[in-house]
Length: 264
Figure 1 (cartoon, rainbow, N blue to C red):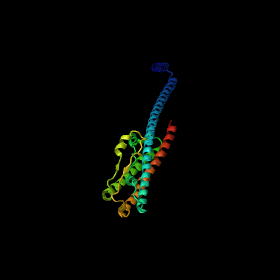
Figure 2 (figure 1 turned 30 degrees about the horizontal axis):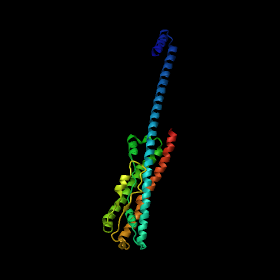
Figure 3 (figure 1 turned 90 degrees about the vertical axis):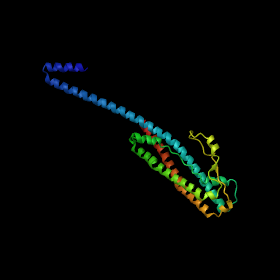
Figure 4 (figure 1 turned 30 degrees about the vertical axis):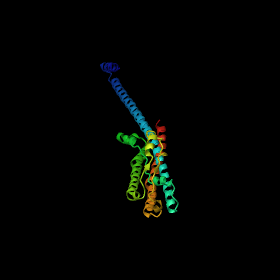
């Protein structure tokens, strides 16, 4: 093809048809430019297809990861509700002078539960290493950053603060009032559960803590103050944080579903 055009150009120059040659030369330049533009457009289309394919892959990874996180956060919320109920049962028994029953040792044990949700950051860290702009929707990108770099970090910090309160109470208060802390059937529970399965349950994990002198606890202001304060702090450090993260995860899963539909 190149030889064909060169032959025509040489004929026009030989016959001194300069005007026609000039028009031909301009036409040839236009064809070259059009060819370059088409090549660039095809290249851009190819790059855009690659980018969209990568974005779809990342969004699907986020979807799968967040679904597991949602299971974990729900599990932590349920455990928290059980802990709160046990605190109220123990306080009711002590403050209304109810007699001791063997079931109370499980409620005493449950008051110190610090089960926390494990949130997987690997997909988000992978996205950050490749570039956040791989997520083309700016609003979705901002919501992901807020979840992983604000809400989840804040949740972990406050959850850890609550665990420290329990550990401190154990060392200063519980040590002289109960036989032992965090006694449970954890060995058999671990054997019965497959932690690779996201649907494993904590229902079979049962702890207990037996008071050394139950009657004395009824008038033990230091212990009563500790338990009441722990109940309040659980609300601020655990309950609110877990529910805030859950709300953000549920919202993000919906946003991701919509975005996947748009891209596809």
